[in-house]
Amino acid sequence: DYTIPMVDSSREYGKRGWFGVGVPQANPTVEPEFHRLLPPDTEAFALRLRSASPDPQQRAIDYLLQLPVLAKDFATLRVDAFLFACTGSSYLVSDDESAAVCAAAEAVFNAPVILAADAIRTRLQEQNVERIALLSPYPDWLNKPAQTYWARQGFEIVAVQQVEIGSDNTDRIYALGSADVEPHLDALLNSGADGFLVSGTGMPALSVIDRLRASGKPAVSSNSALVDCALALVESRFERQPFGSSE
Image 1 (cartoon, rainbow, N blue to C red):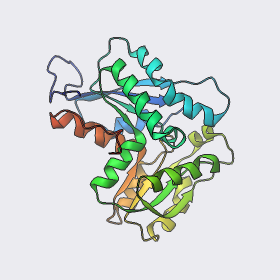
Image 2 (cartoon, rainbow, N blue to C red):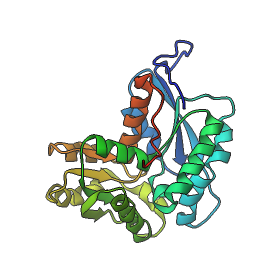
Image 3 (tube, helix red, strand yellow):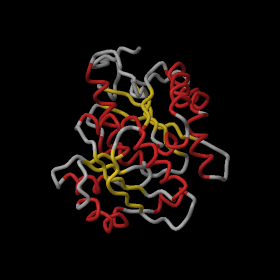
Image 4 (tube, rainbow, N blue to C red):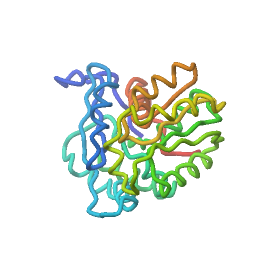
């Protein structure tokens, strides 16, 4: 367990929170969205998640399984929490293996690790969402495991929309803009869902969730959920709750 102080007055910058952020190696979206979402007096420090594999599925798996080793790159940098900004890894790695990897990484960081998928689940549950409409830019090989994952978490999936990237390589996600998502929003809004889940940290999503929230229903993206959970952790002054636990 970790006790997080409300304010660390010894810090020149980021007195209210230092967050490590695991960013997939070519992802250009996480840091800009975190910059816009984090409040003043908090700071994010990026750790690039790396894999030498040419296969996008294996890369997503490597990002998570190699985290305890990659965590050593932070050396003596002590963060209040580490935010793992690759949602797809959780769809491809078993819950038990994810929990074991997080525990090993937490021992290196000496701080809690929050996975993007766990943060999304937490935020949806906090807002009493049971029926979700799922939007992602994933090819089928990742979109189908995503649906399986969220059904296993106890959510009823009432609609699925895929933003086409024209490739099985998820690196193509990074060329998307919010305009590419716009044609899919009406189907989500008319789905009868309790709330909306925009999965993936690489597709720009801030304007998308703003549009969905204008309906009066909750909308959660991977990056917004990570920031919300990190801020709740820092502000609480209490020992952390295990976001990676499904109990």
